Amino acid sequence: MKYRRSTASMLVAAALWAACSAAPALAQQPGAPPPAVLVQAAEMKPIADQAEFIGRAAAVDKVELRARVKGFLGPRKFADGDQVKKDQVVFTIEPETYQAAVDQKKAQLDAARAGLANAETQLKRAAELLRTSTGTQVTYDQRLAEQLQAKAQVEDSSAQLRDAELQLSYTEIKSPIDGRIGRAAFSPGNLVSPDSGVLATIVSENPIRVLFSVTQRELLDARRDQATDPNGIAVRIRLADGSIYKEKGKIDFIDNTVDAKTDGQIVRATFPNPDGMLTDGQTLRVIIEGEQVPTSVAVPQAAIAQDQTGAYLFVVNDKNVVEQKRVRTGVSRDGMVAITSGLKAGERVIVQGQQRVRPGMTVNPSVAPPSASTQKQ
View (tube, rainbow, N blue to C red):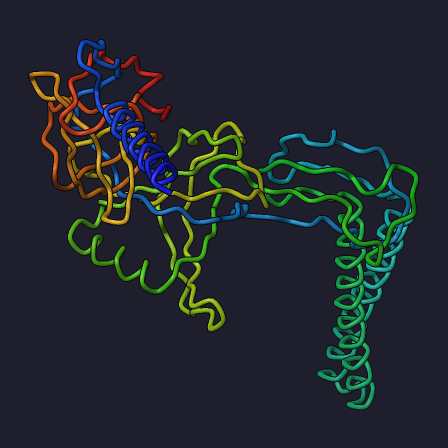
């Protein structure tokens, strides 16, 4: 038993010795070179406080072209996707039938005018005979009625001619706006009528509107900011590839109702669109930010770490010794984070190699290249 206890004691002692000998490995070994880290100086940068919303582009004007008379389509006057001008003819319908109707109504009007001229002559003659007592009142009254009927016939014929001319004008389908015309739904030679549906759609592209929904809380915050600086709200667009659209927009309309299901209210911004990059119906991300961007201490996102206590980072002092600093973070934009407290501009922040250091350790710092400052290693 003594031998066994002695052996057990030796095993325990060996285990303790192994643990004690392994413990220093967690600390910096004497004589070992300081670990290399990449650092970047905290700097004062303007970082805008932004809010993003999902929006949809909508043309200021959008027109669906339809046939207003029945007939066969003539030659098309555009190519799909062309820019068209107001009053430009884009579709034609064979006009012969409608031109014949106009000619017929003109003849009827001429006949009605001739009848009116004859009725007026007969009326004058009856009036003269009545004054000389060679005519009768009955004859005069009859000629007056005939003159009024002939005049009404002229007016009716004139109205029929105007209607026929209007129908003829419908054989030329014109664009009511400046804009881009889409794909034609019918080819020349097809029979179309008012029941045929949309022939083509024209949308105006410059400027273009973007509609997005904003919650009541966000809207109240924006209105408070606008009350302080009415021109202090900038509206930008993030495109599908992540790039920012070059033109700035302006909010010009807020809907007067709130969606009870989402507590959202539709807001509209208008953007210049000279190159036609924005298209009606396109889904976009709308960015709202202040025109006056505050300046704050900023560090790369890669420098920030989190634990149960909150955010922290490592800095290297003038003796190349690592210090841990608890910080409060603010807005994050383009790989940079605003630090609202806990750090001063100019302090060297470790952006790469944090896993190999701990407070109090001496390190070998190098200035991080720009690409390394935004990626945490």
